[in-house]
Length: 508
Image 1 (spheres, one colour):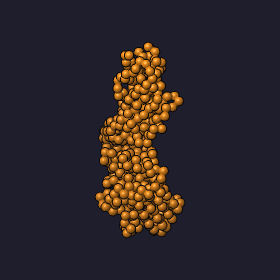
Image 2 (cartoon, one colour; image 1 turned 180 degrees about the vertical axis):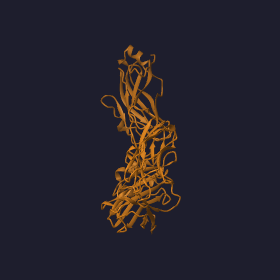
Image 3 (tube, one colour; image 1 turned 135 degrees about the horizontal axis):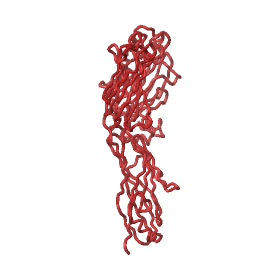
Image 4 (tube, helix red, strand yellow; image 1 turned 90 degrees about the vertical axis):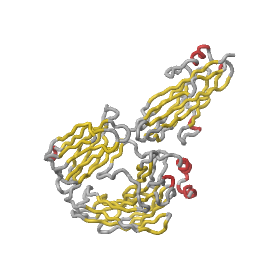
């Protein structure tokens, strides 16, 4: 396997090997939106084999009409880690389309419409989407800023009549309960207005078992007159708002040929501490009124009244939130005729703290001669919430008083990609370091730095010794002071911190 990795991805081998020891970071901290009727939180597959599935979304243009319709019908494959856990796995899918019913949607011979998504456990054990990508040749499931990849297609051969897709999954991410999801898009021929079903029977072969599997999946298309709405959510920026405030819009589009009436719209908390402060929908364009509900509450709901929404028209609502700290999930939903159509709005807001401390309060220095002294100090990033975030890039600014020369700066506890060359002292005396790294929920990381100074004691005046013997971190003329500029990140506010160590002159 090692030779295989060397041949296929030589430039990243060292990163991948080092990355074994790293916990897998969250793909998206911050904002994620989910499509209509979004699936609940991901669950590890309970079976030990590859499963196939189908779905038909009547919400797209023409999806329940007479013309050819892309992005209506999709076929899914789920590949669980129980197949060769912690081993590199290659999966090959061969499948014919059903001409006259549906064909593969190919943007080129090496790309089929659709997505790949990999799910793994975060540091706290929760199953999360690690990465996602398209389904073109060499589209990678990159899951961190350093280019680590969970997998990629090694071969794609796509025509409307036939698809051949080979996907490789990296051994480094195949922990217990992880899985790969493939969602592959098709074009439906004249779907019509009536209910109908579609079938999918691929031939699936893995690198651990050369025996092909031929499972079958069925997707059901509802009649065009059946009530159906596509619900989406989108973050809205609020200028000058409190740090824990949030806002998003909910849109609900009527996908049915039947006007949408007698419905309710709701926004409810599914996870976290945040609350809904207001839900407002303008239904005046559809014969209704501006309807609203006020909180704060875990759930707010409004009714449609006399409003009737024609086919293809869209309702827009605004949802305001408060207390958005840590991990928060809200469900925006439209309910009509006993059916509920929904979308999840996720707003994760990590909150971090920075602490800078000197390892020693005082160092002694000889009154004469030339020698070295070392000053140690720490920079600690702490995530105080249940949402994954990041530490920050920093810039060290060691102050150099008269009689001192900054010889070098070294560090320990820094991210693995920081090397000796990164500690090069810049012309302005600063040392910028790319220390931004995943800071998991309710965790902290501490980095220790050492400034080594060469002292020419004979060049220090009496006033210089007095200044060295006192400390005020905000006054760089006193003691041996280091200023640390924190750039800021997801969860860490930008800021400036200082540490100071006094220097005591020994007696002859």
